[in-house]
Length: 246
Image (tube, rainbow, N blue to C red; front, side, top):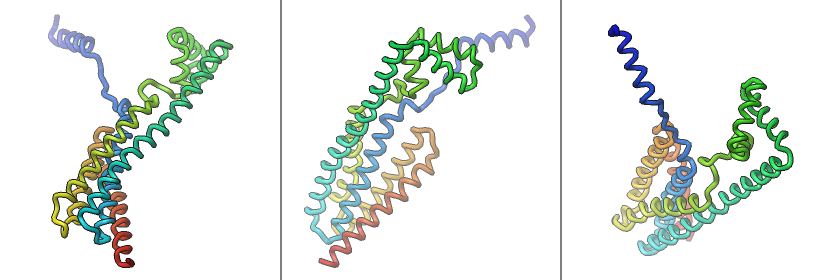
């Protein structure tokens, strides 16, 4: 076999032996959203609380107590909120799946036509769309309608417990950062040290979350830093104002 043909045959064999693989990130959206939201809230809310209380000239013990209370209350609030919110989403998904199940049981042909129309709208020819609908429904009728009609897939399905645990754990992990800084810093430097450490942590968190999701790291860090710095500044200003007024 001539050398060019041999090389081409080798490439073809490698192509068969090494199929094209893509590494998508959509499977991370469920836990990633809850974890990032929890950690971000943990740092921002706890740091803002500590800065507000410290700016009011409170004692170190009062500042630490406020931080610990904020950590516990925030973690529990995040867990409860995520569980309730995602449970509502899950209830809606289950109700829609129940309707589809009833439709398939009562009029399967109409459901097949409905699925075929969806594929036609996406660009398939009517004959091919019907053939695709028939084959997919023969394999998993409810799964095909859940995915292509309702937009419900196993990857993106609501998981209340997972969201609640991720949010609570990540909130607590984030809240620990400013709390530890307050404990370790001299009292006269607690405010700038807490603000600086929290902003660094938030910037790293924003960049890491953007990288995990395949987005721009600089943009991810910048938007987190802007809103977090604003929240801390406003809370510290309120604390200082109350200190002056009282």
